[in-house]
Amino acid sequence: MSNKYAPEPALLAKAETLVEALPYIQRYAGETFVVKYGGHAMGDESLAQTFARDVILLKQVGIHPVVVHGGGPQIGQMLDRLKIKSEFIDGLRVTDRATVEIVEMVLAGSINKQIVSEINAAGGMAIGFSGKDGNLIQARKLRRTKRDEDSNIEKILDLGFVGEPTKINPHVLSVFGRSEIIPVVAPIGIGDNGETYNINADTAAGAIAAA
Image (cartoon, rainbow, N blue to C red; front, side, top):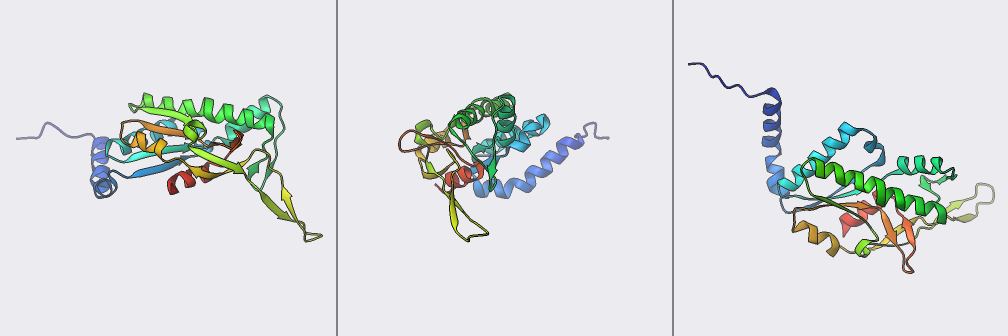
């Protein structure tokens, strides 16, 4: 008697992957994973869809993902469209008052909602916000120094509204851990006097993970 049912190769591959992942799923169930999603990866639609499905899978197996995203290329494109010049020092974008408004608009607006839409379209439930919401990321002005090669004197570099986290409010994210919601965070911080700070996404993700 022949077997009339033969599983598709794609289904077999998925089953094998799940079997291999099962020990890790059991080990990390109930834990929170902070996932940094880089701006350079967002330009590929198929990659964005794969990312969304993977994040949803983490949630479905009992792991609580927190997505922290960048958006450097998209910010650069918007600044070019608006004819606003921008420069980098040590890999960080110098952010004056006009630029930080664009940064917030792109990160907390278009990019954040695009990622949320991708996750929701793939069957998940995502909500996007920035580090300013709920005082999630409190920040201060980032200060960098550079030694002058000729005089050997250290000079303070003014990066404008580039910030570094000083305090993370983990309660904001713990609420989502008890629900089906996947939080998507734009790396924008708030200063003591209400200033808006542009924070490197890797730095923001690390601070949130540590908290």
